[in-house]
Image (cartoon, rainbow, N blue to C red; front, side, top):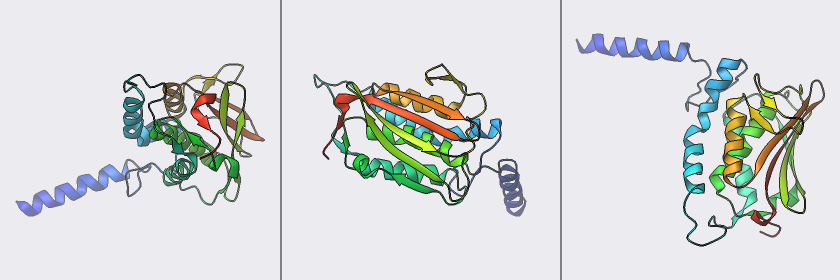
Length: 214
């Protein structure tokens, strides 16, 4: 009886893995391409997103920015690592502006990490082996933007909807989740893409939440 149960369990496990090819050893999606797979793959950030949103919604107790001062460099490194673990699409050259690494932020680190990881993952999925993915920053009078640029196929995930300014309106689960995380910190997400040329995504934050010396 025990032997029968073991065989049944092994058969069920193999069937589960065979019908879900996007799952790697750690349960994270790899090599997603179809609309269905992209929607399923967005689940790799669900737990992190929910924790980040709960932390962002915590009462401030009278403080204007309850989130601690956090060096941005390690947040960027973790976001790149998360994007890589969820794609495994070959080698990418990550060109990160040293000045960006030197910044500090007063936002929930998990929220920023998760939102950046979504944008970096999109870039990795739409570029080729050996391509460059750049991450830099821009500063306005009231905002700071972290900009992800690539010279890939210039396509957005299926179903992605934006307005004329590139602000996300919905469609893709992962990008919508990134915007949800950014808006919880007072920011937003924009993305523009030109087929055959590449794409550029902006994650903006209020100016006062970004500190120019870590």
